[in-house]
View 1 (tube, rainbow, N blue to C red):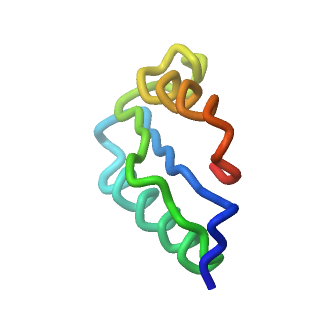
View 2 (cartoon, one colour; view 1 turned 90 degrees about the vertical axis):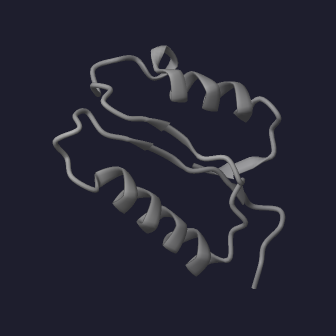
Length: 78
């Protein structure tokens, strides 16, 4: 059952390139979660590879782009 009022957006981040498959695993698990709940997912995913968690979200390239996208007001799940 697809819930079109509950649009989801995917964000993924790893702090180093030594975290093998972490970005792919995050994407897979997030997509699986959305599918299980019947949530449509925005085609564009946002990501910050090789970015420390100590960097403020709005100072990350992907994080900042995601915050800008959220201003449309149609995303209900992150």
